[in-house]
Image (cartoon, rainbow, N blue to C red; front, top):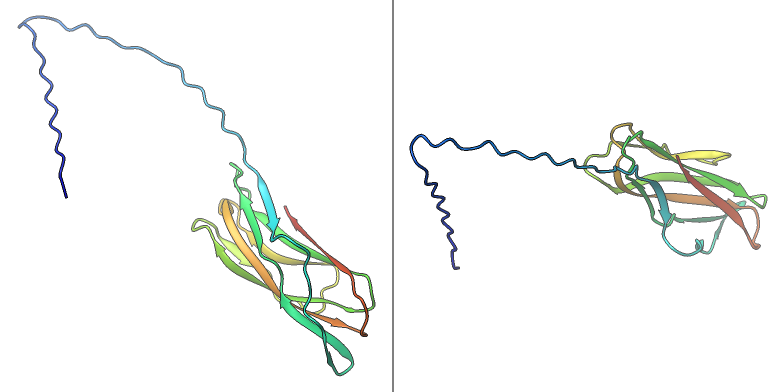
Length: 162
């Protein structure tokens, strides 16, 4: 491995008794810090549920939600909250889920939501503490869904980050 050594020698010559003039210059520097964004992205494509299996009185399907990514670049770093609202369009039992943290930025402090059995209304996936939410977090949730009969099934899961 070659080594490169640079030696810089600055020689200042002057005469004894010569006064050096004080040279200064001011430059105004202006920068605009743009507040960032709070973004949520979901892995692409519709969520296809595994084929339900009959288990007593219900058909059961389980799996994992597509990957969720929360990116917070806001300068104020107020923290954030990620929740989901499940809208069931049949007589099925509401979604049950267990939130899971995949990874997060080193500076983030996150609290995961609790497992919910039979979620009605909204459920919390995760919360980022104020002054500790800036960065990127990857999350998901394991789910279970009970269906009353063998039939087509449609539901909507709305995810919100604020």
